[in-house]
Amino acid sequence: MARKTVSRRCWVSVDATTSLNDIDAGSTPGFSGEEASAREQTEVLRTELVELQARLYAESRQRLLVVLQAMDTGGKDGVIRKVFSGVNPLGVKVARFERPTEGEMARDYLWRVHPHVPANGEITIFNRSHYEDVLVVRVNSLVPRARWKLRYEHIRSFERLLADEGTRIIKIFLHIDRDEQARRLQARLDDPSRQWKFDPHDLEQRKHWSAYMTAFRDAIAETDRKRAPWHVIPANHKWYRDWAVMNILVRTLRDMNPRFPPPAFDPAQFGVIA
Ligand code: AMP
Ligand code: MG
Image 1 (tube, rainbow, N blue to C red):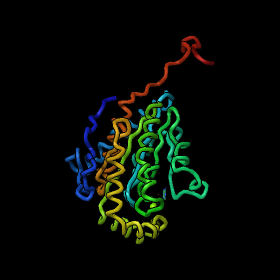
Image 2: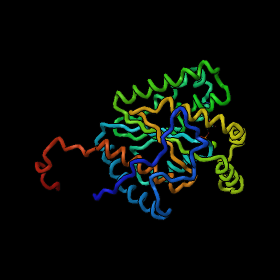
Image 3: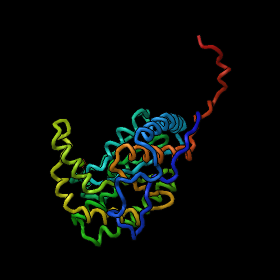
Image 4: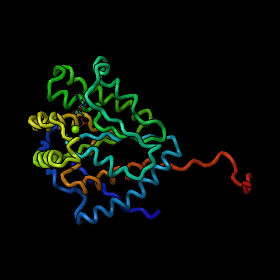
């Protein structure tokens, strides 16, 4: 298959000194053309994504975890629907992390997460993740500061464990700005076919925007590791967001280089099956 060049830098680097408010959520790093050409490129890469995922599944030796985080309306569901459309559902799973149940809250916060990590041959997408335990939990003081402070270290260790044991990890933060969130919330409210997605709780959280930006920045800066890297993607433009995520996925899977396993027999020995 002819390979299209994938973008090397379609995300923004963030460290402890970055203010997420200073990152232009409408920018398109790594891409300078028209929307239509981004969409075209995304479709070309989709063919390759489908091929690479088929190989990963058949090979059944490697696993990929994609952690997706964003503010409410940031586009997590859209990315899952659009970027992964066309892949074989046998080998792709989505784990969604909502408000913990009583049983989950009665245990440590990683307890509910670990069972969902990908098995050999699988891609698992975390739609929200263990990061909520240093985001919504921190911003709303659901546990004392002294407790969530320790969690960055737990998360680094947890992800290192996964990586050491053979799980490839990529973490993606879809970055929208506050005005874009207002537009998207309004659109949900105004459209009867999307009202089901409107959650009044999101309006409460919206009031804490700047606290969330700090919590996200800290979560990213504290846990950005070579073997579990963060990718901050400006996500006001959905077409750019999808293009960027597609680039990152294809690049990662190319690097994993999954192969169809050779047969454990000589196919010729069976001749033509009657
Ligand atoms: P959604 O993903 O829009 O369906 O919403 C899920 C909700 O669950 C969001 O409001 C999250 O902030 C919330 N949530 C996810 N994980 C946690 C957690 N560990 N503690 C508290 N709330 C959480
Ligand atoms: Mg929601």
